[in-house]
Image (cartoon, rainbow, N blue to C red; front, side, top):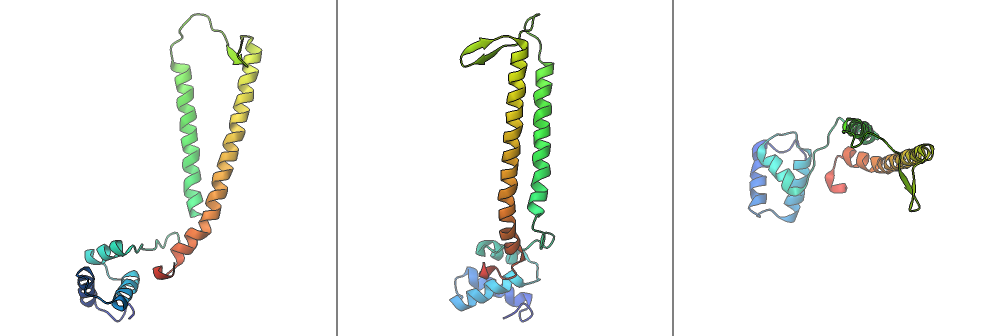
Amino acid sequence: MTNTDMTIEQLLEMIDQYFDCTLSDEQEKALRREIAMTPFRHPAIDEARAVMGIRQINAVHRGNKRSIIRKIIPGLSIAASVAMIITLGVLFLRPATTDTSTCVAYVNGQKVTDEDIVLALMAQNTTEFHEGADRAQQSIIDELESIAPVVDQYESNTNPLEI
């Protein structure tokens, strides 16, 4: 049975029989194949696809292995930029609590007030933070690159029963 053998009326009748549990196992397999490949559009067909777990293939992404990565990375960059802007905005817009400002850091439980040492510690922490963020971003990219071929294979597969 191919998608050219059945009319939409015949297909809808088989779907009704499927929901009434009157199809044999062979007929259910044939219906599953037919629904996966049919060009017909109807709410009953969409409902049967959903119940059977059949997902329609998005032709836009077929053959594009890095489409997921290309969509996620700009979003991560934008999110990081927004977080940085919000942090700097809060830092500069909050009211000062006292007239004198003192740099204070605690190193191994000891209070350090020397401004040069505190600023050096902040610079060191910022560098470590950026290195960690770069490693995390590279790790995410590596994970997504390893997933992309599997997603591409899934999306390019014309028969959902073979997956």
